[in-house]
Image (cartoon, rainbow, N blue to C red; front, side, top):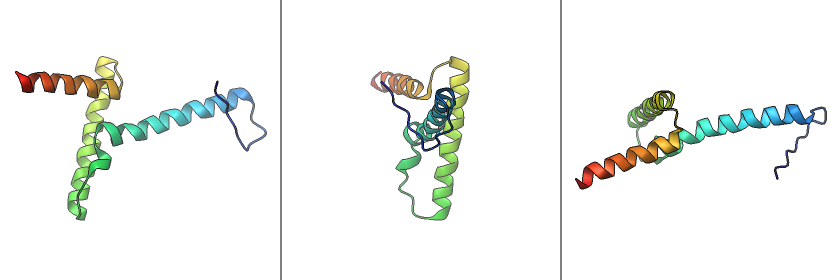
Length: 92
């Protein structure tokens, strides 16, 4: 069971549900680059290397978006499948 709580007492259930669904999509959008494109795993120190890492992360996330549109599979499942293909290639 999911309980939605808001400080806005003028919202009805449909409005709260709509806001919650939008929020979930925004959170998923921000979580994907962190987990699937390694945005949070940067050990860079200088501004130039940080900018390069950020650009590479955005580029990788864009590629995942394109693959998602082509294949109809979400980012997390795509990443798992790409890893599986890479591991098979490595062991062969």
